[in-house]
Image (cartoon, rainbow, N blue to C red; front, side):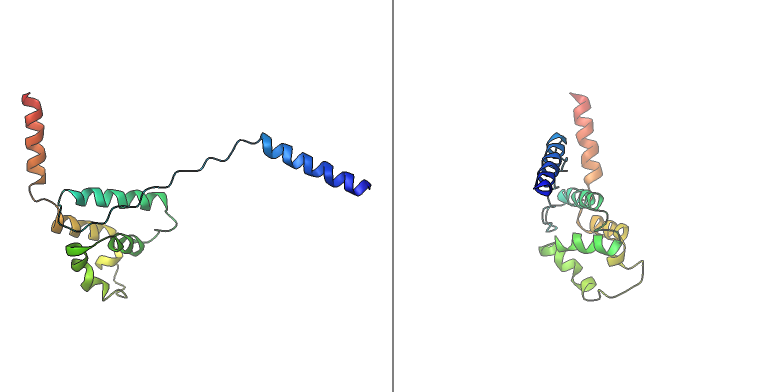
Length: 133
């Protein structure tokens, strides 16, 4: 009987200490980046920024360049996906400067191929238009 009383006291103590603790803060999950098909040049920057947020939020999952590049590649469709097919067929290539192993190289290539070549000029024109008003 004394043992039962002790068990009940321990349970009450444990439940009262849990009730006094504030609930643990849970970081909201980030939305996965939208698929990128390469047909809308203005979306390439948004696509890469969304990927960067995921990489930053889950550093243990994306500790190597190849993991980052493969994640971004998994979100490519259409034209953009076709561009990556030759690289994926040689996925075991171990050279660190190889596109699949280097996020900076991947970013450089995706921007070169899919961004609007007049992006800077258009942005400058928009700024000038704002100043004139």
